[in-house]
Image (cartoon, rainbow, N blue to C red):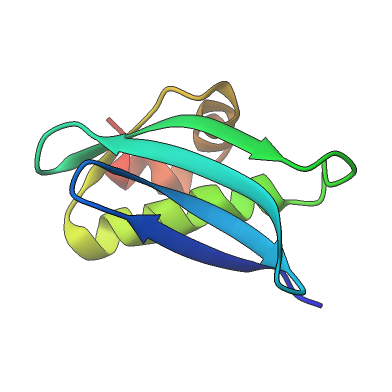
Length: 95
């Protein structure tokens, strides 16, 4: 089955999680830094899912959410930073 990315958030922080067949396989957390910026601070996937693109799906979902809401992203998490470094089309939302 295809991975599905879900967003859960409140006014202070949130996370994206990726599920396959309803089971969480990865999570990427972020915090709001003011009204128009989020900081991605941690990304992890369950063992055995490395290299399957699940982390990038979560980063892509964060970029789409940022674009839709006029936000910028500071990728402090080393994984998220690496995705941003390899994906120049995400630079429009990068701090």
